[in-house]
Image (cartoon, rainbow, N blue to C red; front, side, top):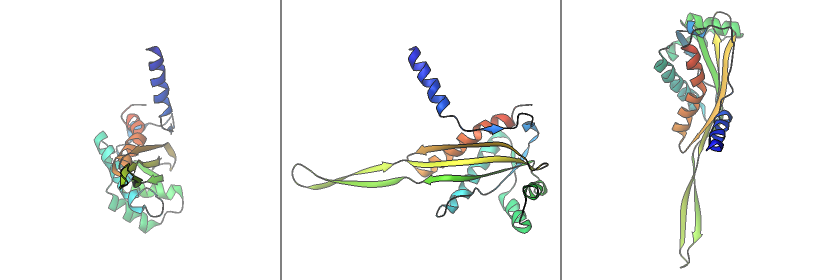
Length: 185
């Protein structure tokens, strides 16, 4: 029985994300976050907006206010920020305490593949095989007063369909941030 407990603990540690955060930063002061459209690879541009919407839902569930993406995008397009400090100032203009930014660095939608075979009676048949969808995401939280990155995380998720993989990746990445936002320094 003891070997199963050790295996389970090792499994959990191996699945942990790659979170880093400033230990001296007061995350409880963040009440409103602006979220950028996450960068995504060519051919998967709509995925960046979908990931932003899933992050929005996850933050609202925590009690954090989220700046309307259309307002934030309009401010970004008008200012064309050249520096991280300008980027942060635009977030402050939008009414945010912080900006959540990131990228989708792996996006493999589910794939169906047919395998053909000849049965014992000579008839051609096929079986359908599905391959898991895979999504990997990086995210970072930027303080609008300083322009500093105060939190960063990355992780991936696999599922049978792309929607579940996207949601799983976002919730895996943001879970540790939600804990920081709800705990006092």
